[in-house]
Length: 427
Image (spheres, rainbow, N blue to C red):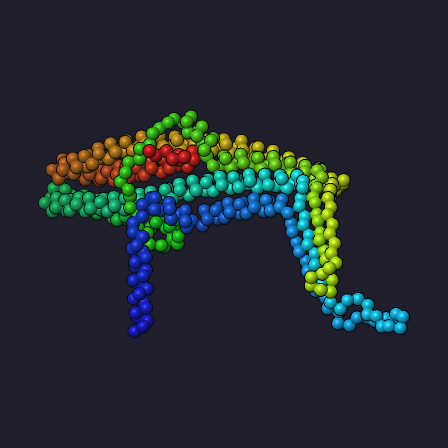
């Protein structure tokens, strides 16, 4: 009885958990991905590590204070005789304490490492922003991909209904001797194709849902329901030059490589810092006695200067190595900038193409629907052959499919241009 009750509570809990999430909009999916996508969470950790590295660079420049204390109990001390008296050599109990402080006064490497750590923080922040842009686009593409798959399933079901109706009409005409049996067979064959297409579309819907779950950072089989927000995309075309200029200044990937260039320049200075001297001040305070609070104390303070006179050419080699890496980053910056600008151009051209296709495919769909209705009525009147009906049916299904695809391709194209530029384009 207890096990049955426990199972009942578990089922109720799971039902409430899944039902509580409800149908997800695109914004819901983006927020979930930002919280659960593992690659994005890993990028956030890189940013956190950069922050910690900056704190480490600060810590190196701060004074270092250390304390040391020891206690020794000499169980058996040596004895000697002096003027007829036994004298114990040493102390039975010894308390020893010391306090040291060291403060770097000048270390060029420390200063450069601090600057490099600050640049790295900015670089990782831009990297995180780029990961976010990519994740938002991937979620958008997967979300609309699933909506498209659902619409295609719905279209295939409608196509089956149309063909069933046509098959019914063909069978009636065949019984009345108006058409021959091949009309019925042709309609049956087309119906079988439609049922096969529905099976393929249903499988594609399952795969599209699993793909969206993966992008969200969830198990592919996680229960998922989405809904489309019925709102227009008010996109204003500003022209390719505008978007490419925005890309140069706003795209996080380019900002990151520029920060990496600054870091490479600092690394050259860091390598040359091996030629510079370092200065530090150190102080010590020591006390020891046979009591915990001693009476014997001493202190010292000193200034230390350290400079490498010869290290086998290591500093020179490090400087050349850093110079080579600087050239690498310069080449990468140019190449990446050109690639990103090309990406923006391709995204812009794709958006223009899909925007025009939305209107064109809408017209074609309207024409195909009217054409199919006219031909179907004409067939019932014996004015056109069955092949003409099947051709009009195929054209109608293709027109509807293309219309659905272009609608979602347009929304995805807007998101792709936003990702390429690095800013929101929708009013």
